[in-house]
Picture 1: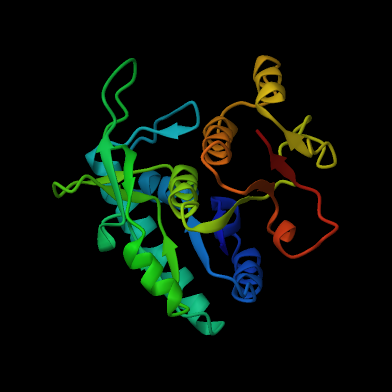
Picture 2: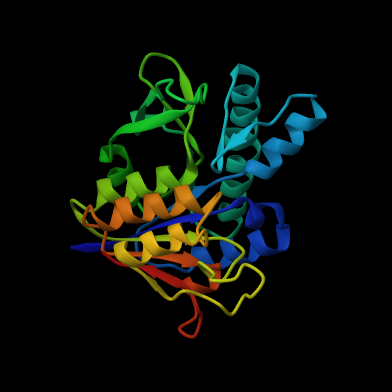
Length: 258
């Protein structure tokens, strides 16, 4: 099967223009088919505060009311997505920006209210790869923001790690799929104060132990959940670390295993 890389970059890379420019220049050099997924929570949070809108989080996930959804759409699908596409074009990488509504590519349902009302947050139900396959065959790189839709006219905020994981799972049917979560740390750390304390391999058993010890918490919880979802659904490789793990053989990073 043909290889494909699904690469997600976090807000800390997006917020740092030098880091983003370096990443995108290197990303362009990946010759195999590739899809980029980006978050952008910090910029959305800054804009919300400027507009006097409260930002509410629980277990690393954002509560999305109607006002927050408007801000997220402007920032994720607008400013961040189009700037990344423009920078890729400057690097001679032909790219096309996507939300889940574009090309009916990612359909979600609004998360049901249980203990917590997450608001306009979507849980992915289906990924349609047909139009993405056509683009990839034409050497056009899809760039996804963290927004999906319910096919009833409603946009939904969807965790960017989940978007990346679900895309990887969908492409695993016809591609040898690798999933990379790039952020500012070297990987999952035993001690968040020590960049060298990288846990190089995590499997389902060691994951449970790390959870009990509180080593994996907050925003790392949904990330690891998505990692294991991917590796258990035929994604060939799942890694977490700095963007350098994509381009340097001597980089430290975390690999997720069954």
